[in-house]
Image 1: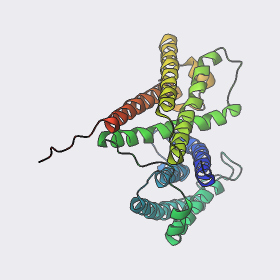
Image 2: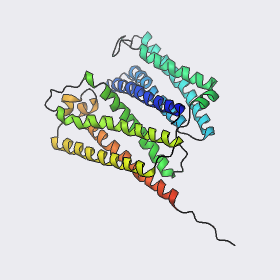
Image 3: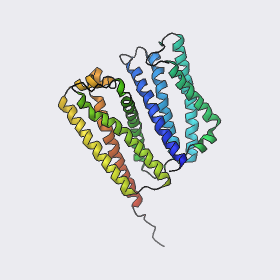
Image 4: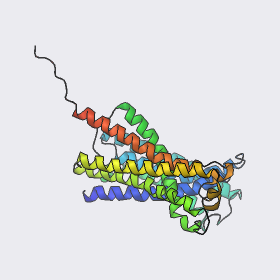
Length: 313
């Protein structure tokens, strides 16, 4: 793996972690107004400003995973415009709320709402930079994956699942990083949450492996038997621990372990007494890995299929 590719790979991981922390915070802003959305004009810009970093993550991902140069240029130009418009609009709304006295300084962070302003300013600045230096950015940021021929259903389903998976994975990784602020190992139900913490790590490890695999394959083909073995191991692990969590969840039959240990990171579950979070953590890795396994084997079988030739006349 070249130095340029390695830097792009590490930059994506760093952006993923930062975007996850912002999304985690933004989700809690959103949940503060979930009862009727009476303060949506106040809370909405807070949540969307935090979510802008996830938008940046997706934009960066497609820039580094699009081998077609023409499509790369169009994607970059579109996202640059989006950063300027959305970032500028949210910046104005945040400032208006400050002027109206809707934001209490120091709420949830020492520099709130300056942190939201900084996010929007950075997004606008990135949009301007992209507009002025598009060719330079395309040259500096490499493509870290090969161009593969995939069936249309694989592309559509894969992108849809990918969006959902990344949102869930980045949120729970951020929740895990924030664990020292809420975790209490002395509660009698702490043991029930241990498999969930394992899944929080596992979900992001799947993404990191996927990105490393693509970056490695860009420059040096990884052996198919090695890739298949790793995928099968991951698939078995996700299925085993996922089923274990579901059995525990169904056997307990109540949300005590949520309210005792995970109220901070699963506010919806606590409010409606439904274990949505554990089931997302259980099902997302299983569905993603099973889809990846089926799609990969299908594509490999298609590529290895001998091509028919026209009869000589």
